[in-house]
Each structure stands twice: as structure tokens, then as C-alpha cells.
Length: 201
View 1: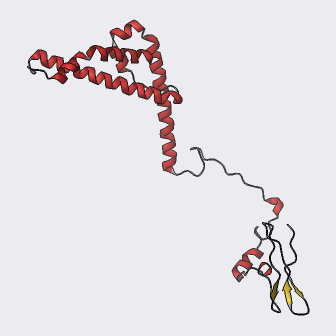
View 2 (view 1 turned 45 degrees about the vertical axis):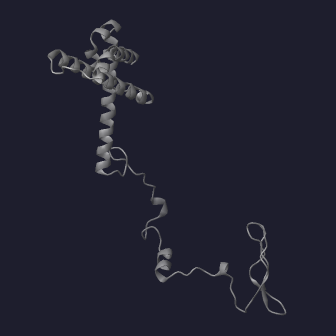
View 3 (view 1 turned 120 degrees about the vertical axis):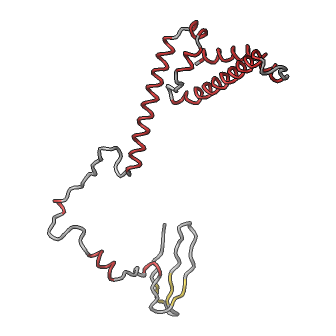
């Protein structure tokens, strides 16, 4: 960027500030100024006496040589990240415990699934019901959670069908409604869907 001097030039008719080029490439016009004018860029920034005092004050204490000072590296406290509050540290510990618990649950679930054969799973669905469903991989956690919700929902529906059937057999419901009969008819479909989902885990 070419810029002409912004100091006023004396000519026969008065003082002028020469034309200058802006950063975008355009030119400023030459300006006529009064005697003693100082351009804005050349006016020194005002500093009060306190600012001047602190600027003149040395950064080190008197008598200490700059070579004697070594950069100090901040040490990390034992509790993890430096500068964390007690609550943040406590939350980090809780998160870590929760993660470890999920890993343990995932290991227990995989061991249980290894022990249970496909034939046993069809005979005793309560064995799988007792084990907690935990995600072994964070990327699969959404799919596993979705499957767990569907399984839970299907088990709830089957439980409701069984309760309805018991109430009809006990005589509590003498005339089942159309919806209740449809619910009883869907029992086989619900059982098959539940079995498919449990095998797909």
C-alpha cells in the first residue's frame, strides 16, 4: 500500500495534506489545513500520570535479574483438571463412576447372553428380563436403547393381555368388549415380535 506523507506541506497559498491511498485502493483528496494542524494519526494518545507510572515501572521487583526468573509451569492438582471447582470435580468423578458402571453392566450382559442358548431363551424369557440392558458401544447405544424400549413395551402389552385373560377366567369381566377381544387375539403376534427382538439383541 502506497501512502503519501500525511504531514502538511507548505505551499504559497497555505498548508495541504497530500492525497493518500486507502486500504481498498481508492485515493483521498488533498486537503487544505490551518497552520499548526496535526493529523489524527500523529496525535499521541493521552496517558494520565497513573498509566505513565505503571508503564515506567519495571515488571520485576528491584534487584531481581531477569535471568533468575524461570517460567513457572502450573502444576495440576490431584483431582483432574486445573482450576475446576469442587462441584465440577465431583461431577467428573460421578461421570467416571457412571461410565465404569455401564462398562460392568455391558460385560455382565454379554456374559449372560453367552451363557443363555437360543433354546433356553425361548423357554425362559424372564432370565433376559432380569439382566440390565446396557450399551456396550456408544455408537450402538441409540439402537440398543430403542430396542430396549420396544421390548419393554411389548412385555407390558403381554402382561396386560395375561391380566385380562385372568380377569375373564375369574369371571370379573363377563362380557369382554371388542377392544379387549382384539387385545387377546394379538397375544401370539406380540409374543413372536418379542422373541424376534430378544434374539436380535
